[in-house]
Length: 339
Image 1 (cartoon, rainbow, N blue to C red):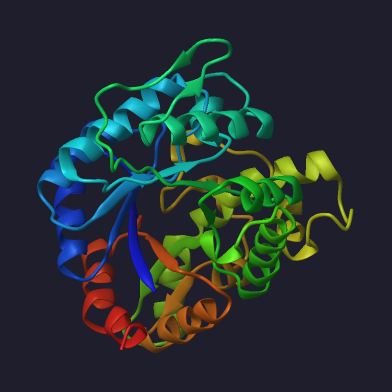
Image 2 (image 1 turned 180 degrees about the vertical axis):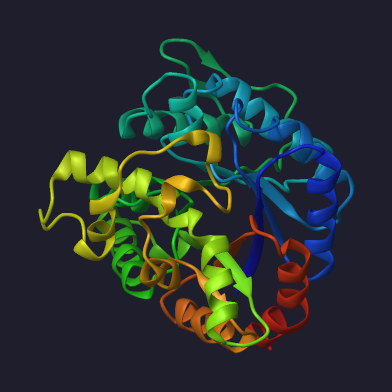
């Protein structure tokens, strides 16, 4: 199993780079960041520094979207980094929840994501792509240029499209039941499209908080540090409920039930511990969606996720124990999983 680290690009950028260096030294192989131009600093600028200061780390956004930048600009940025540092990027892509809404726009449609994935992937690999009537190709890419495109998804149509078209699937929660349900949906769609389902990389991303013990006090603190995640996921869930309705059978109740007490969301606190808009998220959801507790609990849940076909676990490291989490994973969790 691969391991990734997910960060926000808060200033100073040097701290983001330092945490990524620490992650690589601890056995992490992927470095991810948020991509929301208003809320945080521009990630692609910082990727160049991460790549220059690491040797093996693959970097990318979790996730970019088709609306913030034109597709040829996104592809050119990835291709340039790959030309400089040797095919060490991955394009995570989705609808653009915070990036689009903070700028006063609606998240992108699945049709737009589909077209963008084709164009970005082709251009990033040095191939031709049609920009709506104008066919272009980067003349400067190397013959071995690569750019995998992984799609973030929750809903039935997005899961189907991921299995049909994407190189990887990003699932932003670590609930075992929902992971099994959604991984199956993606792989079934891949098979139906005539693809080898093993070619779709499965990445589960969620907060991880390692405690010294499982005392009520330690677990309560960890939950409060990670409760923001249920609120972030709740934005996507609210969109699904609005589209498909409650108890529609198209979206599992295990995903939608908890947002009934949701009253709104202020992106000023997006992805941050102590987010006041996430008090509606119960402890049960934090425990289901995240990895919380002593090292042994993390190892147990990660082993279960691996059995469900998960190829990578990406740690959302937005809480008050960033270095401690990276180190605990490096010294105890990752060696145990990959022994």
